[in-house]
Length: 172
Image (cartoon, rainbow, N blue to C red; front, side, top):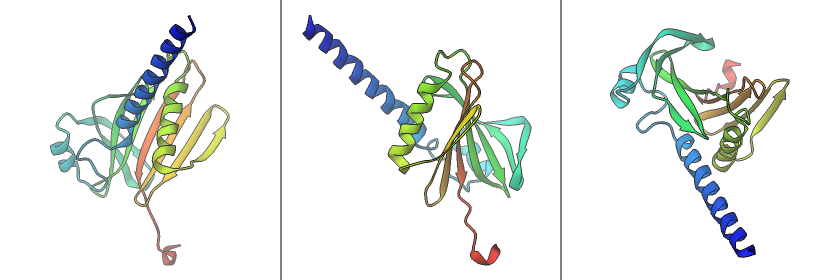
């Protein structure tokens, strides 16, 4: 009996590790061929399934969320990417998912993405506000933000890639 239990436990652990690895593989990289700084025409050529947004969202800094890509599964949730351009160049990608209907409110997906971020970028900067959790990492040319908002019944997750903006001290 104990060997049967250990065999099942081993299978569950191996399956769990494979699941986390597949989550990380989806989240880890931008879509193949996509890079910050590319033009909308280059995005269209790279991702033929990308579609223009009927009502583009405007953000600070002239960012315009003007293109959407195909949904992609990450951590059991379906994330929809929006591509933001400013000055004709891709500067931001937001992957949004609703955790509504998930028994854990997206906590498993958030935890898997948090682990992925730690594995790829190191220790995160974290903030906890009432109703939301944010973590972020910075690399030489990219800022990555993971955000979970809402309660278990209305939770949503957002994974954001932003082109890192550095300023010369003379600009401050």
